[in-house]
Length: 304
Image (cartoon, rainbow, N blue to C red; front, top):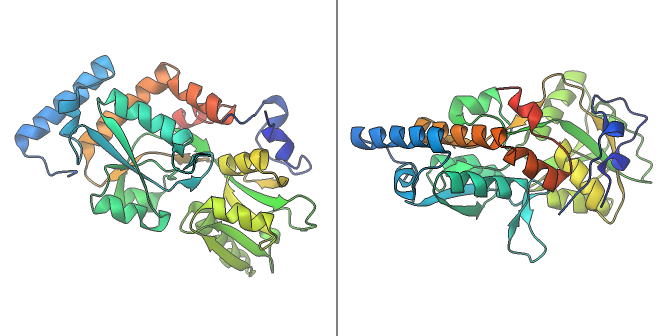
């Protein structure tokens, strides 16, 4: 077992009480005519009563009958990534996606895709949903449907231990090589921070966080800004020691949610019902504990 807490630079203030929390690492959409819309509503009501719907009923909500097609970027451990065999999707999003599909009476199909095209793929009806650590933002909500949140998260900054990088927060990275996954909230945050505070840094945008952490290991970048859950996983599992030197103290945490095509309200409602059930029966906490060794989900429900 690896202890996530050891990766935190305890000299830096943060609002996460890691000292008292043991944190370890285990390891189509169609435009429905009236008849189908009524059937979809019936499916949602069945889910509310029994937690599951039949494959036939749920198939009317999805691109491929009997299947929930899930788009994700498998380069974001421990949330969603490729397992040790090099082929099997692994992580929190996969385990949660399996349960959501099962309770909808569907088979999950995980589709790996580049992050920078994942929302366009949803709009083009290449998959039913995105389950890929997608943070809910006002801009994204204007363009897509979101489920109720399932994870509460914040941003963190990581350095390679022993690298002598002086920066202890994103405000101190002027002139440094800063890495993050492109078109993510870390990217948006750093762009806005540098603009507002008037400093410049060398930008390294990556297609996934697995590549970014390899670059940090090799010393090609100085720091990484990413989601805390990802930073913790990397710090605990990497053969090269990393330190988390900064954790955002924003009072409003970022939350992850399932993303759906705008206007796909029937499937959104069905997934919300399933998520409620997963929180109520402890399944969501069980998955969080299995993957993270800690509770990253309960705070998300408090945002509902």
